[in-house]
Image (cartoon, rainbow, N blue to C red; front, top):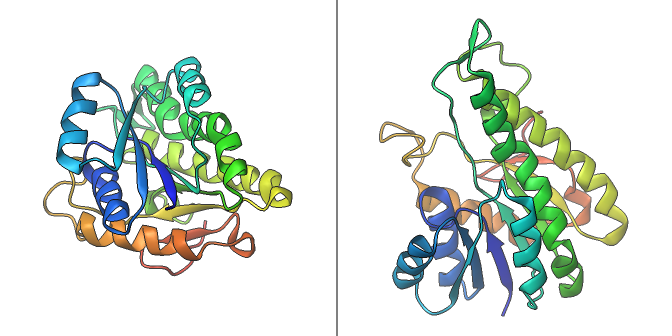
Length: 226
């Protein structure tokens, strides 16, 4: 039975990813930030879901949790993300909020990938997917939600670098654009159903090989430009 780790598995895309993976016969580990959330999510998802309590911003705790986990991982999905702060234009930027967005959206995926890399290596078929955004595309000149856009553009570059460094290990690394999704973050007017997006992401994960490493895919499978 394949095993995966999904960050922020208690709601939104992360929850639907966990549910879709469980429905496909995976054993699923999912990060949540509190024990209460761990208990609630485990009750909703069932016995093959195993919550791991850590905040992706706390790299020391992430490493400690990884050190306590003996299970090999076939797949890591870096899903945790935020779209704050409220003020994030080039002319009116909440710089502390910007730093927080970078901590969650850019630094955390790398920290989590590093911490759980030994588990991916032990499985013999490890893969890393990171949820990015179409808003990272450098062809856009829009300045709204600039901190979010910048953090996703930055994580794209970080994951490209990780893909290069892990290519010799046979561990593919790819980025996913989930589109505009109907979640708490995306709102109810968004285009895409999170259930459909989750299934699409897992389909990509199932076919991902080293020949795809460093690429940026739309959730529906086609390759996106950076």
